[in-house]
Length: 211
Image (tube, rainbow, N blue to C red; front, side, top):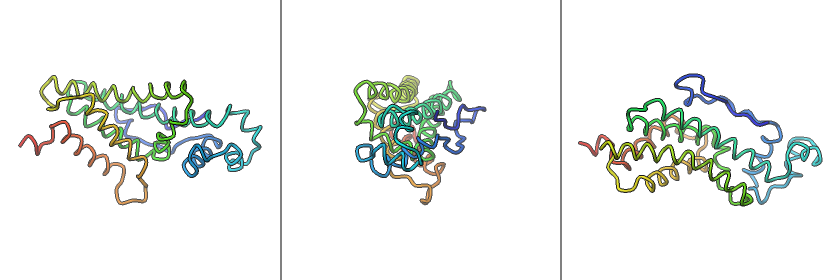
């Protein structure tokens, strides 16, 4: 069974990223999907990467889509608990909640860029799996939207449409997984700081706007 660095053990656990712990099969599938795309990858290629026969691979996973589902669920499950934990740190401060949630999302997309880049492959899922995956992604959107709405209600944020703002910010953050590389000039923490700055401008809460 696939595992990622699991539950946060401390209040700051959502900022902590250990190595991504995948089974050999899922690790091989992840590399194959990233290099060939889901449509171009084959079970035979994945089995060859991991050094097993195709029938042996099917013993562990029903089909190629099953491999993709396992990887997508791993990624969405991890980002969801990180976002919830980040929001729970500052229940009485929408601004601090917002900063932490944006930071949590960007850190996840950068540290887990291999998983995050698979999001675009969801179009190949069957309708039932696409609905289930979409519902899990929606959990993250709902947390961010609720934080933004709370900020608007308390006069902390100035914007017309919290729902569309939330979607726009998520799209910006999720795109990180498609281009980020750990050998680049920015660390995940540096990148998160810049994206928080942009996000605060989007909700009208950046200090420069308030001056």
